[in-house]
Image (cartoon, rainbow, N blue to C red; front, side, top):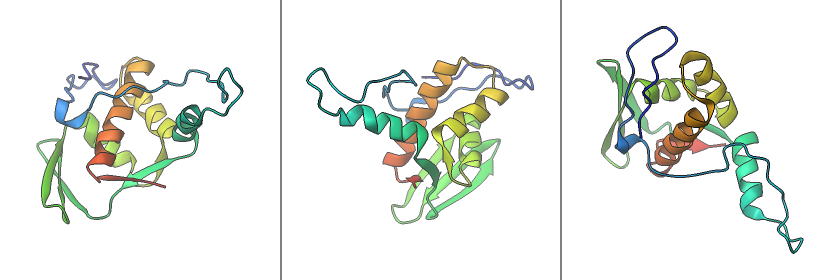
Length: 140
C-alpha cells in the first residue's frame, strides 16, 4: 500500500513500503450499533469505538531512533531489530512523541498531506497496527 499524495507544501510524493503497513481493515469511522440482532453487546464494535476515541498511541521508550536522508531509522534495544520509516511514517513517529489518539494523528496528517480521508485513516491504522505488533508503539 502506498501514499502517493504530495504534501500540501508540494514536496514529492512518498511511498509507504509494505514493511511499514500490513493489511488490516477497520470500520473507518462508520457508525456502528453496539448490539447485534439478538440484542447482545457487540464487543468488536465497542473495541473499534475505543480505538478511535479513547486510546492514545505513543513511542516505546526502548527505541533508539534518528534521521537518515529524511527517513527515520530505529532500533529496538531489547529485540535487537532495526526498522526504517518513510517520510510519512516519520511524521507519524514525530506526532506520537506525546500520546495522541487516532483522530488527533489523522486530523493532523490531513492538514499536511493532500490525501483522501479514508485512505489516510486506513494507512494510519495499518501503520499503527504494524508498529504496535513490532513493539515500537505503546497504547495508553
